[in-house]
Length: 253
Image (cartoon, rainbow, N blue to C red):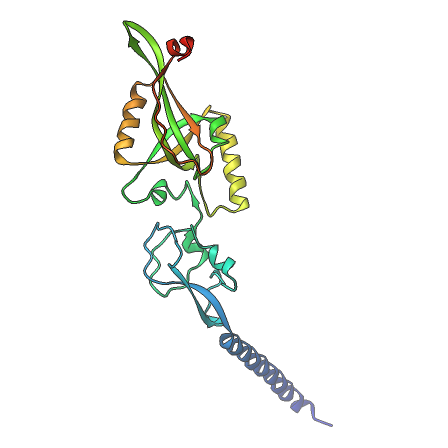
C-alpha cells in the first residue's frame, strides 16, 4: 500500500496528465479545423466605400476554416454569391480581403441616394401623395404631368401637359429597391406607416438627366399640381402629346 506521503504527488501527476491531454487534444482540433477549407467571398479588386457591389467585384476563395472571419460570407452555391449583388460597402475593401457582414449593408435610404444614381444622371426627389408611394415601386417607369393656370385668349384657365416621359423611379421613401430582405422590408413598411400618420406626402426619387432635372425644378416652382403616372412594364415609347385644357374637353377635341 502506498504511503500517504506519496498519494498527493501521484494525484497531482494524474491531474497534470489530464490537463496536458486536454490541451493537446484542443490544439489538434484547432489544427484540423485550420486544415479544413471553406469557400468564402473575397474582393476581386479594391472596392471603394459606399459602392454598390456588382457582378464581377466578388470572387470565391477556399481558405483554412481557422482563418475565416466569423461573419464572412460562406459561398457554396451561386445563390450564396448573388446575395452580395446590390449591397453597398460601408468601408473600403482592399483586393483579396474577405468580405464580412459588417462591411456591407443593404441598399436603403440610410445609405443615401447617390449610390443608386448612374453616372451622368441626377437623382431628384419630389413629394407625392402617400397613396401613390404605396403603389409605385423602385424601377418603375413614370411620366410627369403638370397642372397650372395660364391665360388663354385673355382668360385664365387650368391646363395640363406632360413634361417628362419614361423616367425611372430610383426610390420610394426609404426603399431604394435592392438587397432588402423580409425583415428590412417590414421595417421600411412600418416607417412609412408611421410617417403617414404625420404627413400626407412621401418622397419619390427619380433618375433624370441634368437638363430634365432643371425643367422639373422650374415647373415645380410655378405648378399648382404635379401628377405621377405609372407606365406599363415594358412600355418605353415616347408619345407626342398636346397640352390639355377644359375648352378642348368640352368641344370634344
